[in-house]
Length: 441
Image (cartoon, one colour):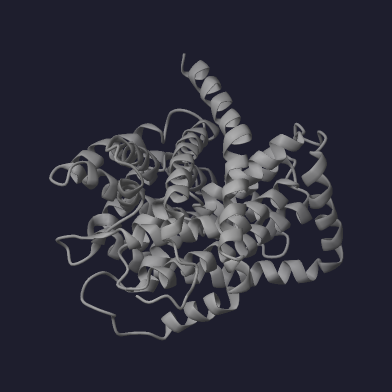
C-alpha cells in the first residue's frame, strides 16, 4: 500500500511538472522578464554593487526588522548548500547532463519570478509584536483574491514544505554511512540543533547562516575552481555533452537508465526551483522581515542569490561530477561530489559528513522557520506549538522509513502546488511590482 501510494504520487508529480510546472515557469518568467525589460540581466551590475554596499553597512535602518543581509543569508541558507551538491546532482543522475541547461534557463527566468514574490511579500507585509514584520505569499495573496482559503492552503503547504524530511534524511544517512555513527544519536542531535537555532525565528537563523554560507562559498568555490582549471582542457567536451543532451535527452549508459527530452527538461527545471526556491514562496516570508524600507532593493538581493546559487555553486557541482564520469554510476547522492573531489583532495571524504551536516543544517533551519511563520498565520496563538507537534514526529518518522526518492517526491509535489498558486498570485499583482532600484521607499 505504501509503495503503491508513492508510485501514484510520483506519477502525479512528474505529470504536473512536465505539463504544467515547466510551461508555467517558462511563460510567466518570460512574461515578467519582458515587462521588467530583462531587469535581472541589464541591472545585474547594480544589483551586485548593492549587495556589497550592504556588507559595509553596520547601522540598522530602523528599530523594526532585521538587517537586510541577515534576511538575505537566512533565505539563501535554504538554497546554498545541500540543494546545490545533492539535489542538482540528482537531476543529472535522473535526467542526464542536459538537465543542467534547463536548470540555467529556469534560474534565468526564475530570478525575476523570485524578485517579484519577494517584492510583493515586502510590499504587503504587516508589523508584528516582535518589532519585526510578517509577510510572504499568504499576505499578498489576500490582495490577489477575496477567497480566504487560498492563503490558508498556501500556509498548510508551507508547513509541510518547512519540515524538509528529505534534507533531514540526507544529512543523517550521510553521517551514519560515512562515519559509522549510531543513527538514533545523529537524528536526535540534528533535531536538537534545529530546535536551538530556530527558537529566535528568522533573526536566529540569519545569524547562523551568515556564518555557515560564506565559509562554504569560500571553501567550495575555491576548491572547485582549482579542479576545473586543472581540467580546463576537458571542459569544452563537457559543455558539448550538456548542450547535446539538453535537446535530445540521453541514452542509457552505465547505471543511468536514459532520459527523454521531456524528462531532461523537467528534472533540470524542477530541481532548480527546489534548490533555488524559485516560486515556492519561502524567500518572500524570510525577506519580509528586513529593516530595509525599499522592497526593490531587498528583492534585488534575491536575484544575486539565485545567480550565486545556480550559476556558480550548482554549476560547479555538476561540472565536477561530469568531469569525473561518476554521474551515471548510480552513486549515493550525498557522496558523489566528495568522490569527484577526492582525486584532487584526498582529505575531503573524511570531512565530508561534517560538511554535509553544516550545509544541511542551514537548509533545514531556514525552511523550518518559514513553516513556523506559516503555522502562526493559521493560528497566532497556538500555531508554533502545533507546528512543532507536527514537524518533530515527521523528522523522526521519515529518518527511518521510506526512501530518499520518496521523500524528495513529497517535497517536489508540495513545491509544484506552491509554485502554481504563487505564480497565479504574482500574475494578478504584477502591476504592483516596480522593477527599478531607484524606486522611492
